[in-house]
Length: 158
Image (cartoon, rainbow, N blue to C red; front, side, top):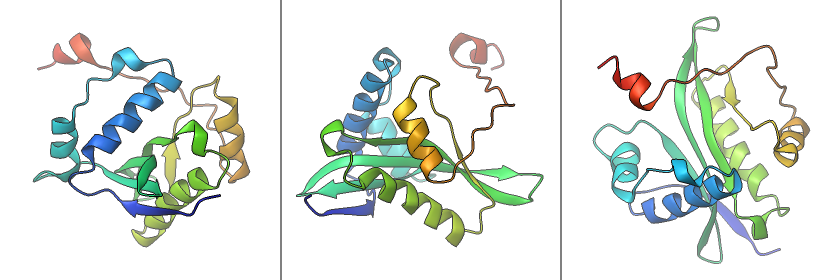
């Protein structure tokens, strides 16, 4: 197993992040939904008002995985939380502890920031990821249904 490091993403990493987002979308059979660009990632992650953060996994000088997250708030806990939007490791680098190191880096950040929880979603068919999350002690929130408003439906409220 080649050594790897987990590091915060910095301006200039947009090319790697976009490549990994596209690979994740391919894996999830959602490639047609990616509209992100290097420019939009640069603005939203590293611009004057960043809205998300990202940890990268790197081995032998190549970025091979990422964890992208943002802060939310729990009124019940009266504490901030972290929502893990994406966790992805290129298939040929899986099974080496990289995914676990990436997600643990988010858990550590949550503890350092005084967060009350870390949450994320997983597609129902993605059994390998579901088993991975359960092995970390995560519990499914089966009683909740995620709702989403995007595109034209969202624009109606402009």
